[in-house]
Image (cartoon, rainbow, N blue to C red; front, top):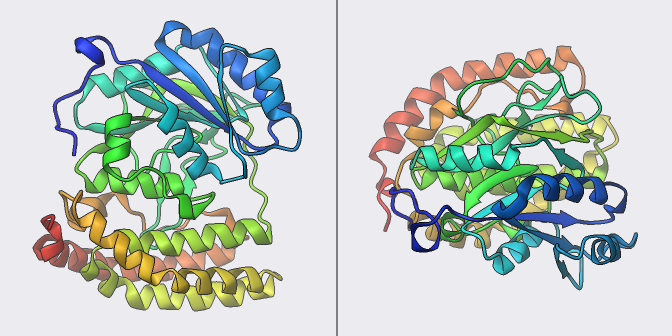
Length: 365
């Protein structure tokens, strides 16, 4: 596990960054993304594109138009997390910066991220402030928000951008524009390749927190994102499966015991709701897939004990009892869900903090 002393580059020099962009049929957006990065990064960074076997010529576009960019061609579409891991393996920089291909960066975005990392040795990962591509005065995400049942969302999405000032703590850093040191990325286990896509940034941020580091949003680093949320059966399956895997892998046993009634009730309610929306099959497949992965979950929990330095009691303040997800449709249903969720959290929160702080899992094995 990296020490809390801030690590610099080779010989004590300023750390160098590797910007990693994972592309899958991203030719329409990739040119603008890479042009903006190369115009700003200068000598600060190398730029790596991992092409997940795109069918639209994304890799050829990079090879033809951006010869200064390192191109890695994956033989198959391995997903976002595993694609990022491929880029990280090839990276020569001290810092890894993961960036979505449907983004363009504002001048100074990378420098601001690096400065935030350098300024505080407790910062393990940091993200840019994300704004809507076509409306840069409107927020896409001012940091990741997270419900205690594992739902994650872009905080303040759709609100006017009035976020300025110093870096501040968030529940998770969005993988759309995230910085983490290569040393810490390796120490906490990289992105989980089994997630394929969705929730892998929440999961990684959680493990960074478990290792005793801060996760922050840096308002001075601005990235414009072509964000849209369109639930499909495939997306719902990935989101719900990975959310379940994440809470099963990362929570301490005492926390899972306290939350088990809420988890069971939520799964039954969500299955009923999504069945009414014609998505019940996707939700059931997500539940069954998570259950099939239980042996793997147990093995991962053992490995995570070796990097955990803080208990769930230290993470509870970052969790929300309110859902702010687009998955649950209209306001009346959300209000009802939040009323029930909030009532349960009032009882569960103090119990989690007490039990987690005394659990044997708090100290790495």
